[in-house]
Image 1 (cartoon, rainbow, N blue to C red):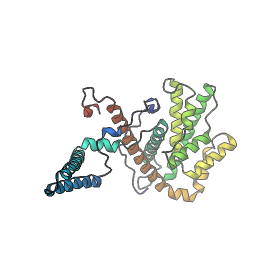
Image 2 (cartoon, rainbow, N blue to C red; image 1 turned 60 degrees about the vertical axis):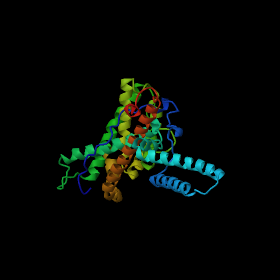
Image 3 (spheres, helix red, strand yellow; image 1 turned 60 degrees about the horizontal axis):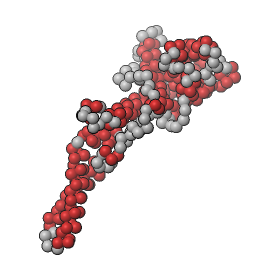
Image 4 (cartoon, rainbow, N blue to C red; image 1 turned 135 degrees about the horizontal axis):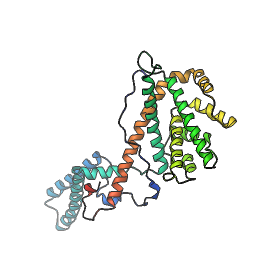
Length: 313
């Protein structure tokens, strides 16, 4: 990194709503938007067409009565389309509804994956700030990127031990660390995919959200995911291989050996961290737009009950 990473305000990663329990008819009905326009160019084209039709109607004074009736009917249709287009262009609320209506709602898996990217960047920023205040910082005031990764591995190990303790207390098998790595790698590559979250399926064994101890287990498991998201790919694969053979995490000095032996990874850590920040920004934007779509979808269900639509939103 050439400069200290600054905090950026992002939407708070609140406890995810169970979108799957909401009615399936939350989508904004197309018929509620009078005109289907994709962009301003199409809108302007429709207005020009309407005006051209008006000019043709005015200039055709010598047409017979039948032609005049046909022209009047066509002109009326063109005029209606022109007024609808102008109304849509002049009404920012309707334009907004048209745009936001094209944003798909998120299922609970996608929402969790987006939140993971946001939380992982916050973890990275937090540990960077922590090391910047300690003796690990270089003369520039920035910590060594490799030291950040080592601190993240300590974070993973600490939370993983708590996960194992809780699983033992509940007398259930421990989560499969390899599948958690697989899920993290999938989120890193592309979050907007069909499929189930292994982590969420594991947590459904008990009343996650109401059972305090199991909820704490969920928090710890998500912390492990977020930590793994900030571990470079090569070291993720080393962890996966070691866990497959030993069914436990490697000691800290072995992980450190893997990391410092990988010169390409060490050199690429600043860019890797920048990419995490960039993906976090995209995730925050996607989550915000999806939440706005959800708000609009819910609000439209209460239209016609004496409450202004903007007040509902």
